[in-house]
Length: 165
Image (cartoon, rainbow, N blue to C red; front, side):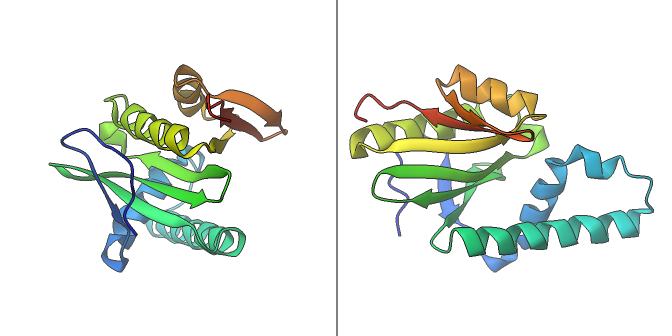
């Protein structure tokens, strides 16, 4: 399946493949600083990150069996990932991580703008959930026009209010 998102020159999306597993696991770990701060020997920390990553992936497959897992690439190679679930009336961003060296360099904004343009053309909503403690991600989503639609103790559900919805 083609991604159908108009990306600017220098950006590319491709489906994640088996050979991306190490990169994806490292991204997962980079997005969980609370794990890195645990007083564990490196081998145990790596095992914990691997287990947490595997549990997350199994959960995603169970909740979103038709999800699309994309690798975000630039000329430099892979710089992030985005997992999406498309339905008739919405696109749900399940997981979105930019590699630490590429954060605050416009990668996240570029991908979100492409997704917003896509949902605008398709007359769909764009939704996501963000951890309340992930201040940088929430700031990005707010800057991109997302609004909080629901909140729990740990997460906020956000939606981008498309003009065609």
